Length: 70
Image (cartoon, rainbow, N blue to C red; front, top):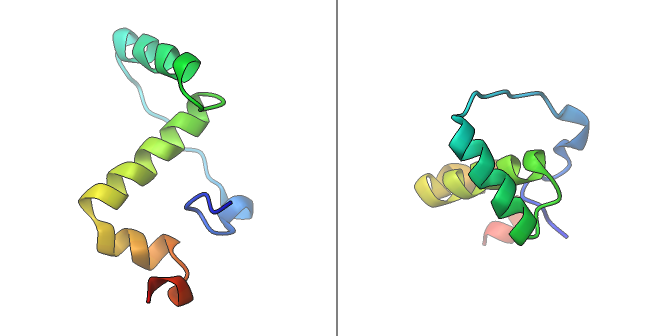
């Protein structure tokens, strides 16, 4: 299954962010009801969706193999 990251697994870096307590609680509740395994999975997916929605050309350049773009 293509997860939107190609084979970047070996290149993973840590990105941290502070969020208000209520947002953290909302994320935790959403994870319980959704298919995300944990907060990291949720955040990676949210970032991919944001870039895909707001910058589709950039998303395609970075994540979609060239042969699949045609």
